[in-house]
Length: 124
Image (cartoon, rainbow, N blue to C red):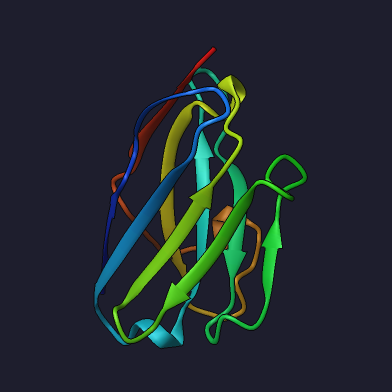
């Protein structure tokens, strides 16, 4: 089993920044690809960014490109999502997830383990 705990969410004004963290415990963190997904009220959960097990490959949703950066520190069992130039449409619950393939696949259904989520609210 893998346990994931997100932190770093909050209320921020448009144009501001937040850094989300997700700490993993349980099985070897460095074996897993990691992803950040988000879900806004009344909408489906959507892919934001993923990173493979070594950190050498990342993927971003079009909405995140140029503004968000995913990274990981395998020594700290932690994955991060740095979010800059935030917009009101970024408001959602953000979830981190672990992908057992290690590749950091962008499809949510591949991910076996999920955190409880952290709320991000961007005011206009």
